[in-house]
Length: 281
Image (cartoon, rainbow, N blue to C red; front, side):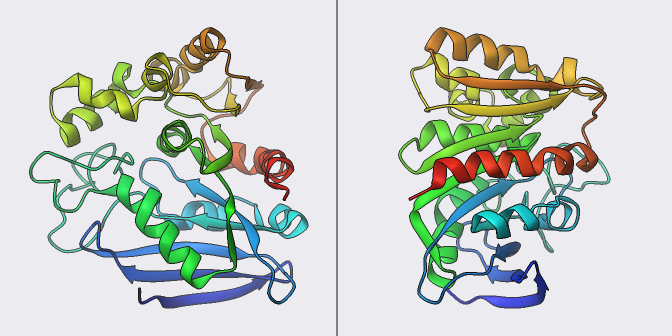
């Protein structure tokens, strides 16, 4: 698959790149970023996938996430995809709805018109992009983990639960843990997947666990000053189902932190160290 390099910048003796390619899944050009830490010629490195939240592109975490120091220290490749297809003719005007359409793909493969052609973010982030990255970067495909923020936290948890053999670790910042039961999720899942709520369950971390999906452990941070905590995030629902399913969950309430990248960047190093421990060969 052809890959266009948009930018390269040296950082912590590694290389931060931004790339574009024509996606088979979304039928659009897609942009993503990859940080490759310094490494010995011929070596293969563990990779951490980062899924971003509503309204974001690859650029938010790339510019604000403060992950490169920890990735260089622990030898981790860090990949950040976009959150939706974009371009002329792609439905979903963010001027009308920040939480649905462009910038809000919700990591599902849409089945409803007019989104079914382009909004295939599940297939993109779990199948197409990993194959592309493995072709072009020194990735050890046996050592992968996944993390995300808000909508991306939802994506990371569901990806881990549906592919427990692929990812060695999964963590999240302020994830939407039960999208079938909160306004953001009901709007997105209904709009992309239709009104049959049985079909929503494979894109809901709490429902997946209730239905028997398992993962070895989770790390989740949220801020008690997060304006979306009570209505949209509801971390207590994840805690309840993990306790019933005997899934180890480290759920950390961070005093005074909100939903922003100030929160994410503060605890990014903690998360990457946690991932690195579980990604050791």
